Length: 288
Ligand SMILES: [Zn+2]
Image (cartoon, rainbow, N blue to C red):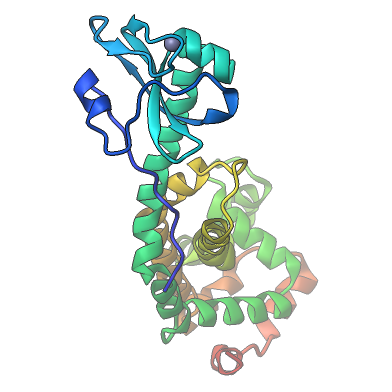
């Protein structure tokens, strides 16, 4: 079973009855600092219907705090007594409690993902599929190890630069014939040179999940959950990016497409290499 974040009770106090009807509520607690351990909620009523739970105060008031006591009961403190025993103002404490509530909601959102456990399955499926992410990674690595850097740079440029005025686009315009230009225009799957499949799948989907599980196992007060919530909100979209990228890889590594690479203008030595290289997609894929 996977670990999830512990979710604290959400306390909403709308009236004085909400306070005194709590099962562990006690009043007239002796005014000793060690009797009060923790502020769990604040309240703000329209009228002075609340009565302070400290025996030497008992003041009627409209806003204050619900607190835990050292004998594991609860009582309430007026603003003055809150200040006396916890040294906090109402507004400051309200902000702290609002923060805690935000974190609580984030934990609920993230627990849904931690409970499901389907992300790792989805990642594994994408990795292990025939012509899936593992295939793409290995074939692309082998391709990059074999072909000249100038070609790889040109492919990256074709994939990322929409601006027409690059050195490459000038070369294509001035030194290529029409059939070469057509071939370059028809190249498919270039996005695999713009996005890194490992970063998109492992870096952006799996790694944050592993970190989140660690954090749920050992929660601390410092780590912000906001980036994990953004990650969770973005998961569906990120999976779509990965699926598209794998499809791009399948389109790029076809004989038809690879043949067209010979049309890209390169320095002579590199162009010769591209034409003569005996890189074989099936051999590269076998190493997967
Ligand atoms: Zn008081």
